[in-house]
Image (cartoon, rainbow, N blue to C red; front, side, top):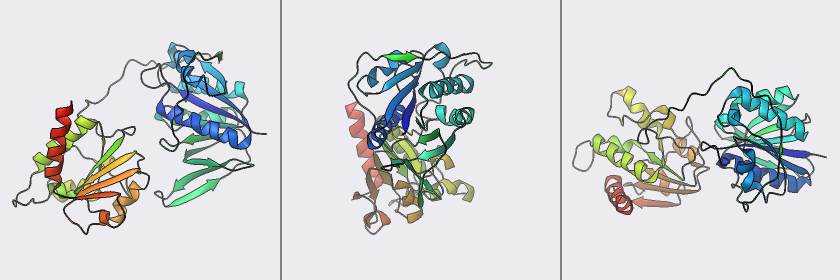
Length: 340
């Protein structure tokens, strides 16, 4: 019979569990219910008991590793903490969020306990055995995996499950002792300014700019500077994440006018990222298939385009506004500024 362990960690504040961790808890509860398996949840944080308060109603055994050494992401301490929890739980299936903190350590943890691992898991199923689904070849092929080896570690992609939202309370956490010795010292964080940070995986909205922003407008002139101000203004007012079509990102190498804050990291589509934001707004894009393939996991898809025959109007968007993106975004930014 399977037993399930969900590994979680605190967010950047150090006092609450990360959103990805709460999504993994939901996945663990659903899988345990399907298999009739026992569920345990491990917490790695400065104060595991405080961070686990939200899990008081999860109906699972809670294990925790606490201490100042576990407040920050660091390979040595995180790997040691996850290894200790995995051994204490003796689980056959270990679920963990595919966060940057756990992605870099979980393969090592699986090796230490003699297990196997799969990453980028998007769904879990199976009635009498565990089946893990993930995508290959730029999200064109979905595979369903099973393994006989145990323990089996599964890293879950963000946005594939709802975040656990049980009633908070006093949680009873079994403390796991771990040697926190490490040669690495965390001296602080360096983060970009809010206006410079355009890629936000946890944002509620994805804003995508297409090549139309840098083309000639109805007055016959190019307004790249104005386009940049409108886009950055919208991102500042909404904290949205910024994406781009390949054609716009590539324009710099072709000697054309470009938006200076866009890089290939912002690219959405066949050769770019495939995000999972709840909402998406495409502007000055034409909805070409290579670009739209990156939108398949966006919840509410909307587009602004002057072309009534663009690809977005052919079943690729939920709502299409036939309008000038410059005029629309100017008005939207005015409304957003008035609210703040």
